[in-house]
Length: 420
Image (tube, rainbow, N blue to C red; front, side, top):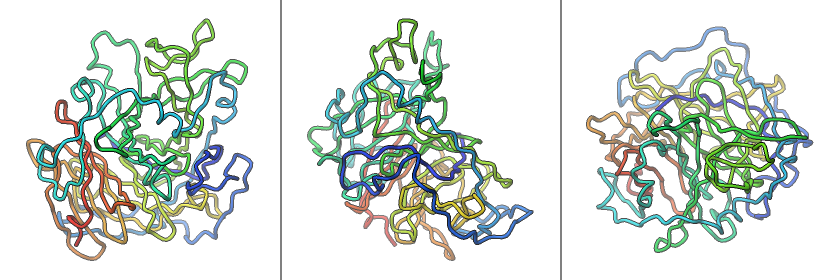
């Protein structure tokens, strides 16, 4: 997994959707005042290093004051407003799903993940396409307090594009998001939408693809957080998804004024780009949401295939769904740890327990590491070639997925089967 950096300050400009159960208030707009908290930390000149913790020794605390995130925020709200295209919410898009996933039994999921409650496999073509690769996962269980959007339970999965694996490709197509309705296991439907970055001017708006790895996802209100390797974080607007004019394999505004999104009918526009300016340069590969921390937080972490010193971060969230900003215009993590594990592809925490998905074992096998601060870690079985993790509080489940061609599954594991 390519490593990615999470950073951010206030995330504004996403309009509120019609769903009454989302945690973001109706006044979360570009004009809403930013409430800052007192900055708790002095300047720290030297970045702390954990070295190489012994594998399995548990989370090693680091000085959180050494990792403030200063951020440059660029908003695309005026360009989104200018597109001459129909706009719809994620709930409306979920009524127009055009592909079918196949429910499978626990025994059909490669690997040894315990307590699988439900699982599915992508339809033919998507399960075997080499140049679109699944990575991150989130769902309406993150985005909405009830876990539902207009009565439907949705799972979102990011797929990044490998141009060199598609013969005769002439463009970098970026990232697509699968929107999957998992409400009825007997009728699993989904559709892809392309992530796009608005460009041009309000008089002639266009957009381009978003060439990032998208190793994790977190859906909070109308915001979809995606980490970006080495530079920061992108936020996409799930309340103003664009319905484009044509399914031609082109991108943006054509000479005739019509819009295309590399063959997809829908494009999810970037609302903000947040660029980290911290001196310690924390590196982030994945992101998840923890509603049980105080305050609720984004969890991010660093992938490394060679070191056990990769770090985990817990970033506090304001009630709006934006990161908490201090009086010194920066965000201070609530906690920072060295993981004492390598090859970590995703992490979630719930009520003080952490789970890390690792692709360290040989021959494509995966493992799940359960950890706490101040204690040793426990290694459990997991699915083969694992990627990101997400926690479903309504069902008490951890969701994950696999990426290997012809063995691409999404599965849900009961918390009780992996709990202490």
